[in-house]
Structure formats: C-alpha cells, structure tokens
Image (cartoon, rainbow, N blue to C red; front, side, top):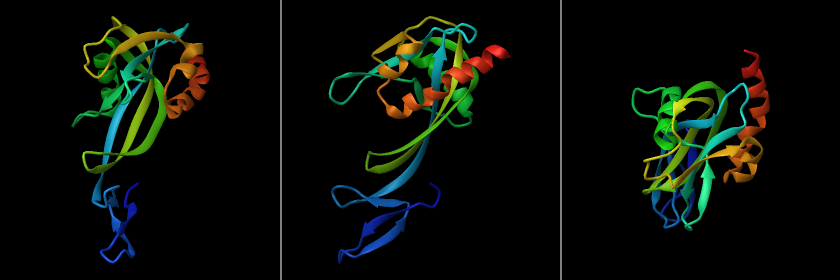
Length: 175
C-alpha cells in the first residue's frame, strides 16, 4: 500500500507511527519494501483443456506443496513477459497468455525486511516444450486434471483465482 504506516514504539514504549517501517518480533524496526512477481496457470489447450501444470516445492517442514509457477519480474520486463519466462523456467513449457487470472497480494518478513508482495497471475496455453524442470527451487512438475486443481493447490489465494477458470476457458474457446 503506498504510503502505508506501521506502528513502531519509542524508547518510552509510547506508540508512534513511522512511514514504511514496522517492528519485528525482536523489537527491531523493519524496513518495508515492495516486490512484484508473475506467473500463472498453464493449461494443455484452451479449446479442450483437461489438465494444467503445477509445480511442487518443499516447504519449511519438508513437505511437498503444489503451487502455481511464478517468479520475480526482472528490470525492464512486463508482468506478462515475466509470467511467460517463469513458466518456461519452472515447468519447461512454452506458453502464450490467454487472459489475466488476477493478482494476489500478501506480506511476509524476510532478511530483516517486511515485504509487500504482489503476484500477477495469468491463464496461459501451452504451445510447446516438455514438462520438466532444471530450477533448483522446484522439486516436481506435473500435469494435473482440472477437477483436481483446487484440492491440490496449497494456498487458498491461488485456489480462489481458479473460481474464474470455467468462465475464462469458455470465453477463450468462443474466440
């Protein structure tokens, strides 16, 4: 959020507001930064899509979690270009954007910073390549039946993006 303020404490414990900072668990002031990523859901064909590509990553507890492929937008890159590149890097698939699925925004703390992350998601159609990955952050990739996506995806915010999928596929088939 532009211009967001987060509570901070003064030496006497009285609350005060500081723009762009927040207090961490150890009492240190954390600098707030913004990050932007892009990715999305790749289907095997808009006209008769039956499966979509997901990536599996190992979480902090050592469990496999299925998520949509995504990654940072590089300098000079649009979110659309980043989505296509990240899909290729994380799944091995070449894809074209069909439509926007929508953004997801969330906050987390990493490296002594409070990060406001926005991830732009797109619906993409596979146009080539072979499902697989060389990406060290990705443990597995798989084609998953469309009717299993919601039960497989780890994050509720990604599952909610799929609410629009039937309508988007119908619209894409009509064009």
